[in-house]
Length: 126
Image 1: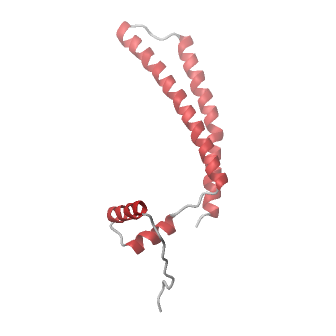
Image 2: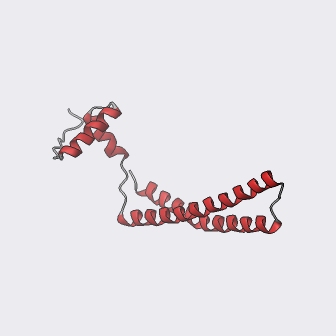
Image 3: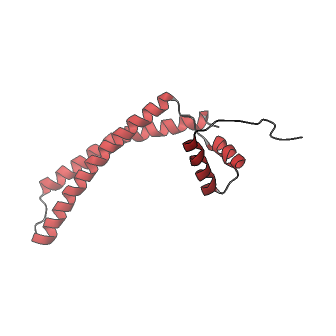
């Protein structure tokens, strides 16, 4: 008795077919194996999950921007300390510390949201 007794016939555009063929070649799998693996490994994101992920992505992008600014400030302080033997003031270091603490506190709810999304996905996934 055949294990797989359902055939699937789909229509693709020329571009979609070329993309599929390229991915098949890269994977080294047969078309059947590739499609079965794609089905087995696929995650279906609900609109709500997609929306939450987009929001988290935006928040992380903003935090990364802030961290880059802090890194630039630290670099400037290090450059002055090395080039001019000028150590940063306590006030400058405290401002940087407060900025990092603020970002850390903002990141905590983001990490909690991510953990909840992952937990929900693993319970509802395959």
